[in-house]
Image 1 (cartoon, rainbow, N blue to C red):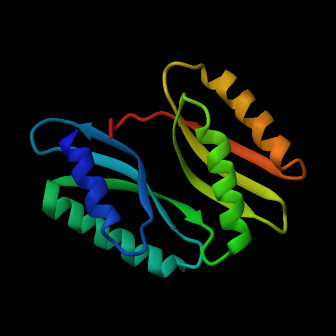
Image 2 (cartoon, rainbow, N blue to C red; image 1 turned 60 degrees about the vertical axis):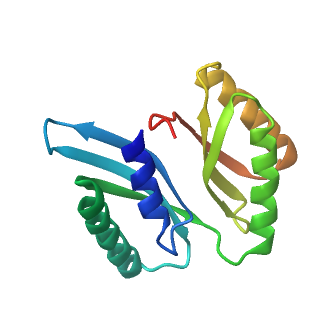
Image 3 (cartoon, rainbow, N blue to C red; image 1 turned 90 degrees about the vertical axis):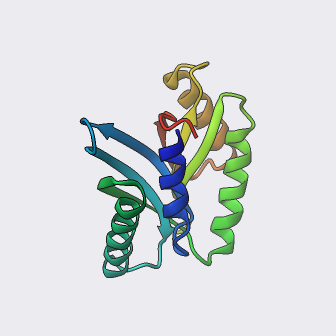
Length: 159
């Protein structure tokens, strides 16, 4: 638990990183720790900027923890879009109104195309299929014209 907390903290110290999610650690014996993670970054970053950031983050995590980041996935977030921020806040309220919704992240909305995607970490108190049905219904009621993609997620890092 301490290692996952430390890695998430190190990654979140970077100014561009809004959050570190879906961290999975693998241990293959002494001094053989590998991990993968998703970082939430602004949609305005170029691939070159993302590459520089992930290489810097990989080196920092290895230097501080000895863990090798073997995979860094990216969630983009809407930067500088007031309408998108309002939609995100409203969807977050809808999702988090359920006791079994542990975390909401990876939200992105394309207002023009009327598409939104996000991840929801669910407790073990509900079957993912049942939770997704409830969430689709609730969010679709608020945004009937939008295509909605929800990725079920499990909190395996215990943080």
